[in-house]
Image 1 (tube, helix red, strand yellow):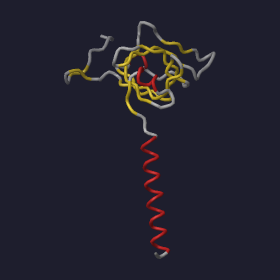
Image 2 (cartoon, one colour):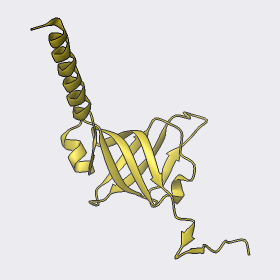
Image 3 (cartoon, one colour):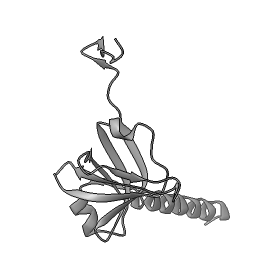
Length: 131
């Protein structure tokens, strides 16, 4: 074999290894119970903010700590800890996607994505309260 062939085989092997490594690190959508079964893995959990229990954000004490309760799509509720500031218009969100891991009974989120209410309903602008 020539050196060029050997170098080509090594490059192809490294590329395949890199692809397999990135595929192994991808997170997947799950419920809180599925995330609890694999606490070392990162998951996307979809659900809704439990407005009855409210949220806690005290920027005077710790501006990078926001906690609230979320109910996932299977109806299970967990306390969520986000080590970032409270997202703007959080209470208005229709749906939340958390990215993070379970730690004990709590879900520690590294990121939070929110689906906010649509500006339009049935193609017509929403009525405003300032009439």
